[in-house]
Amino acid sequence: MEACNKKFMIVVAIVITMIGSGTMLVNGQTFCHMSKAGLKACLPSCSGDNPVDPPAPACCSAIANADLPCLCQYKDSSLLKTIYGVDPNQAMALPVKCKVVDSSFHC
Image (tube, rainbow, N blue to C red; front, top):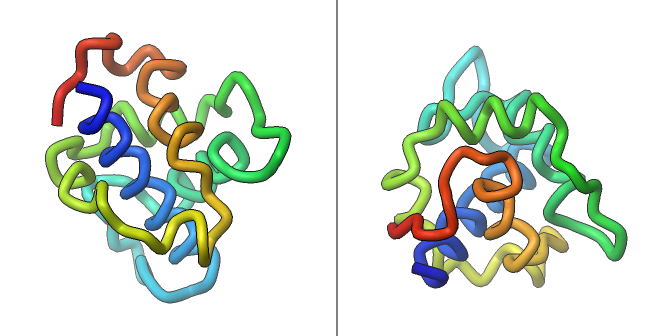
């Protein structure tokens, strides 16, 4: 369960940071049903020493509409922390903090 949540949030964070650098999601495209704006809204809650808590409503809305199994496919990416500064533990907590899933969520 915890590994799946971690995987999901890592994917979210990777996508968020890739969007911020302009490498993905152009012309209204989505990543696992999350828009560029939704992904960017989640970044402050899963990066830095003082993450925003609770997550922004736009972040929670994006997570609520996301294709969680799609996002779970990216759980093992090493890019999050080293390149993008995303804390996987913070990212993993977002679906629960947003009350999109309960603590028993499994990828």
